[in-house]
Length: 65
Image (cartoon, rainbow, N blue to C red; front, side, top):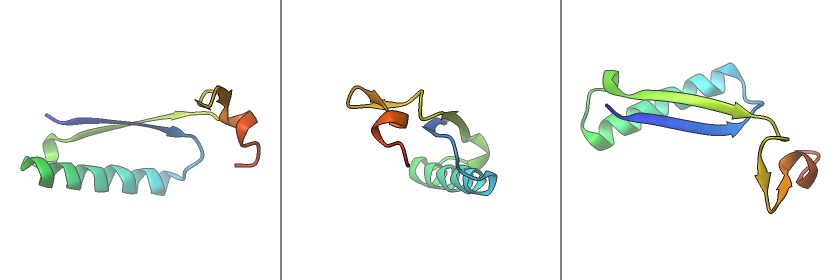
């Protein structure tokens, strides 16, 4: 059973997250030739203070976005 974990910055709409789940599930089912009902997707959201790049939290590195 494929299990996909997505970690991303918080801020996307519920509709965007639902679309992501649908599209990832469909693509995985097709690529692995498995029923879509067997595909699992979990989305984990983190704040800009909990995600870092280049040694700095995104909140500091990119304060406006």
